[in-house]
Amino acid sequence: MQLDKIHATVVTGFLGSGKTTLLSNLIKNATNKRIAVIVNEFGEMDIDAELLRGCPLACEGEETETDDGIFELANGCICCTVEEEFVPVMKKLIEKRDAIDHIVIETSGLALPKPLVQAFNWPEIKRHCTVDSVIAVLDGPAIAAGTWAHDPHAVDAARAADESLDHDPSLEELLDDQIGAADLAIVSKADQLDEAQKTTVETWLRSRLPARVKTLFVANGEADPELLTGLDAATEDRIESITTHHDAHHEAGESHEHAHDHFDSTVVTLGTVDADELLAGMRELIAEQTIYRAKGFVAAGDKPMRQVVQGVGERIAHYFDRLWEADETRQTRLVFIGHDLDHTRIRTRLAAAELH
Image (cartoon, rainbow, N blue to C red; front, side):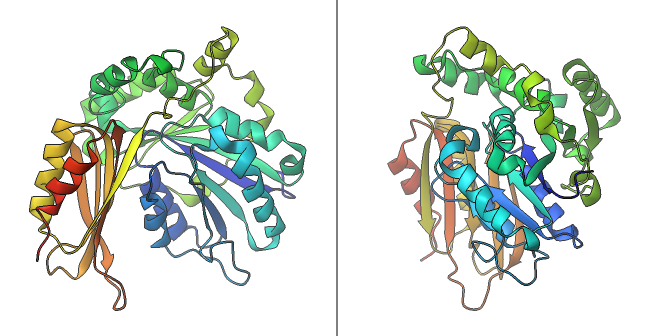
């Protein structure tokens, strides 16, 4: 074990796969480690970072850059901007190494883990840090249904319609690239799988995962923190031996324009709302437009608790996560991520749910 280096865990997976839930539980339960978190989420509002701020970090003494151990990279996937933002953030963490036991990096849904892991071989990082593991989070029910997401055909159709993306991996290839670089595959939402579905998922995993990759089924993001942060895989030492679809496209001489360059996002801010009407409006909008992800916080009527809403495809999950603070403004904030969004329509439809 490389005791003289800070260990880093990279968590990857598609939008809605359960990365943030897993990470939230890790932070809450890793009471014997001071964890620094790098969150990278596409969109104008970093909802995932906001969710993580609700988790108590077991850090005492020296403060991290944002007082809560969370670094937000807001200008795209880590793999795209690694030279511009990732290294400076890592340098800041290295400077605080006496106050940090472990680093966790949550990539965006379309990020490729290989370029990020390769950055750990840069001299200024390699001297001080090692990749403990790459963890790929997979949506169990979606895989059991025979696909990686709720409606892959609609997403693939949208990608295929954009000529600038024809050289990038398909989303199926991107999934292969994510799990191909993984040391551990975590199948989320296992409580939603019956035995037959679990067998289907296990068969699929055996056909796609390298033999060295272990698999863990979890429910509600609950996994042993020691497992998530103690694999000591030193992934950077083997990363060059991994060949991805992304590499093949480059070797074929195709230009490099990332799949998310043409994503669109919009943020809607409202006051207190009728939660049922808001959810109905979200379902209408998802049916009408090419919306890949919708997420945010809701001030639901006279409820004393903040409601979290997360939607992927036609699936919308919602739950209350905590009480509103006495000095906190009760407001509803939602971010929509998609393609060629009708911003006016989204804002107008959701405004109908606002209580006056």
